[in-house]
Figure (cartoon, one colour):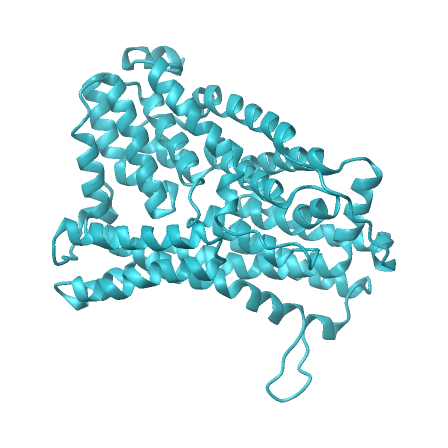
Length: 465
């Protein structure tokens, strides 16, 4: 098992059932928020309630506090929280520069509207997420530009944001530098190159089918041509330097925070030099206790998402420290009695843990040793095991409304909404329109039932060659 789980110290009243109660409380309020199409605030409350209830169930309040702090001290929390704020700054620079109107008008003139805009957005997001190895990073680059441009070009907002999340899932699933690819390969002691090559038989057909589904089902709306003078100024295109810098730095394997920071600073400098912005539009103190400009607006717009992360990660810390993740993995492993049931357990355990934690790599690492042991026992090939874990994580983590793959796209869509009359995209709507994730679920069922892609350990040497 992973190190994060092996030193569980937190004991709750009721033992395992006490921990499961907290999990069920969280899921109950998540479902309430989802069925009421709640904004991010509803999901904050959904995880805040079990955090407050949990203190009364802990046998040792100090250990409970350590578990909470342990969740907050995870590097992933700090990275995503700061990235959300920096991405919000870039989004404000892009939306206020007039670039969106320029791109939208060019897309409309070229006939790239409605359904076709959704399809192209999916392909571009697939390319960016695959190249950078990060779905979340792709959201920060793509949504501030293509989401508002697409809405103005007649694309359906729900299918558009779903196609972006779907493209992010593709990159997480297949990119050689993705943390999920690395985790799935290393836990099964397989080479990354072989894992990626063998995974193509799952990811490429799923991506193709998802593209077809977007072309078939995504509706087209009336285009909105901007009449603002700013919308037709070619000078606004220089703000494209923001995503270009971010993508370039990510491809150079720079840290996401570094890429977003340099991208935002570059956008501010270029915007000021070309007269797109005035200094007071960036930051202004008009009077006592007053502040205005792009920077404070970006920070305030990102705060709900940061608040969600501040309750989600402590909840993850409690689940880990109480041994709940270990218990789920070990419990599912007991039903494995043959190759097909091992594959079903691999998909089920990874999928459940990915949905609970919201972090695919954590789910894979948590269940990795169990999957490896079962695979060795029942002759399931290491590439097959790694692929099933990664594909399951990249499917199930994207079809629930409380992970970053629903919360972040929802937040960015709301922050970059070009039409005041357009209703905000709720977190529950994002996974419903993620056709890659749902098609991958179908692919996994097909693979387990029919044996599609199944290989045996005796074939590993031939595959490596």
